[in-house]
Length: 337
Length: 173
Image 1 (cartoon, each protein chain N blue to C red):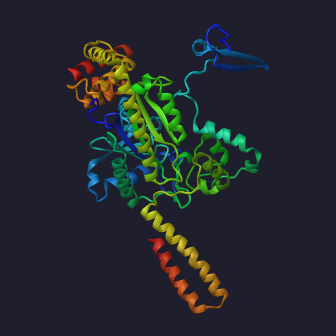
Image 2 (cartoon, each protein chain N blue to C red):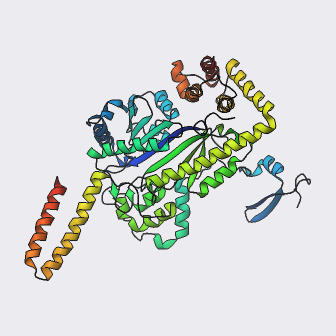
Image 3 (cartoon, each protein chain N blue to C red):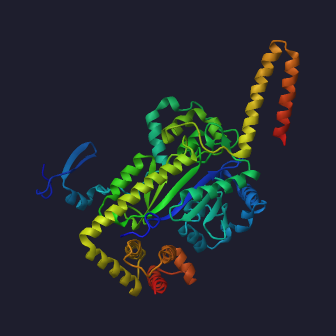
C-alpha cells in the first residue's frame, strides 16, 4: 500500500468564506473613517458581546494598530487579504485564539467571515461558518434581497456570498503537465483554480487552490458538494499519476525525495522558490510513506514561516533578500533537525 | 506544415500579427514558439496565473457586447450612496445595497451572465428573512383590504386593518 491516508494528505486545508453587508450602510469603499469605525464597532459587538461561548475565543485587531510586517504576515497565514491591507486605515479583523477563524471587517464587504480547517473538511468548515453567521445576524441587520440573496459590493459574490475552497498538493499532475487539463476541466464546471504561491505561470511548491465561481442560483450545500466531488476526482487523478510514476521510476523518485530532504537539512541559503519546491518533494515523500520520521505538520508550519514577512517577524528585524535566504535556511534546518 | 523557424518539426502554433494594418503570419513548432519571445505572450501556457483578467475587464466586454440599448440616457445616481452606473462600470463595485435596486435594469443582465442565474436559492437570514416575510404579508393584506373596501365588505376590511397594524408594530420593534 503506497498511501497511508487517501485524500486528507493531498488536501492541505479546506476553507469557507462568507461575504455579508450591513443593511442601510454604504459598502466600505464609500465610508469615511467615522462610518468605518461604526461598522467595526457594530460587527465586533455582535460577536464579542454575544452570550455565545464563541465570544471568548475572539479578539478584535485594528489593522492600523499593527506594524506593516505584522499585517503582511497575517496575509501569509491566509487570515486576511491583501485588499484589506491596502485599506488598513478602515479595516479590522476579529480573530479566534486558534487563528483558523477570521472575520475581516471593511474589506470589500463589511463582513468577510472565513473558516479554515486542516485537511479535507469543507462541510465542517461550513457548519462553523454558518453558526458564526447566525450569531452575527442576531445583532446585525444584513443587506439581503429575496431575489438576489445576500447583496455584496461586487456582483460576482451576490446570492450565497460563499466561496468554498480547498488547497491541494499536486506534484504528480504538475510534473506530468496534466495540471493544464485539470485546470480546463475545473473551469468548465463553474470553478476556478490557481497556484497559491508565486506569480505568473510559475506555481511554486505545487500547491493549488480550487474554489467555486458561481455564488447565485445554487444552495450552499450544492456549491460545497460540487467542490467536494471535483476535489475527489482530482485527488484520484493525482494518486493514480503518482502510482504510475512510481511504478516506472521508483528509484529515481526516492532519490529525488531524499536529495531534497538533504538540501533542506543542510543548505545555508534558500530562496522562497527553491525552498517551496524542495518542501513539495519532501511532502510527497511523507504522503507516499517513503519518509516516515517527519510530521507533515512541520512542513505546514514551514509553509508559513518561510514566507518573507513572517520570516522577518520571527527574526525580529527587516532583512534584505540575501539575509532572508540565510535565515530561511536556518529556520528550515532547525525545524527538520 | 513544417515550422518556419527550424524546418524540422510540425508547426502547431499559428500566430497572426497585425501591426498598422500589415498582416504577418507565423507558423512554429512548440519548441520554437516557446523561444520566440517577440510576442511576449505565454503561448504554451493556458494556465497563466498572472493573467490580467479581472471582473472589470470582463465587464467591459459585456458592455461592448450589449451595446447602446443599455446606456442610460441621463446620469441616474443611487439616492442612498450617490453612485452612478458609470462609477460601477469603472470600478466593478456597487456603492451600496440600494444600488442593486436603482440599477436593477442594468445589473440584472450582468448578474445573469456571471452566474447564469438571477434567483437566489440558498440561505435565508433568520431575522432579516423574517422581516421580509412580514413585509410581504403586509403587502398582501393591503391588497386584500383594497379589494374588501371596493366591495364594501367593511367588517372584513376592519379585521384586515387590525392584522396590518399588528404586523406593522412588529416591524417597528
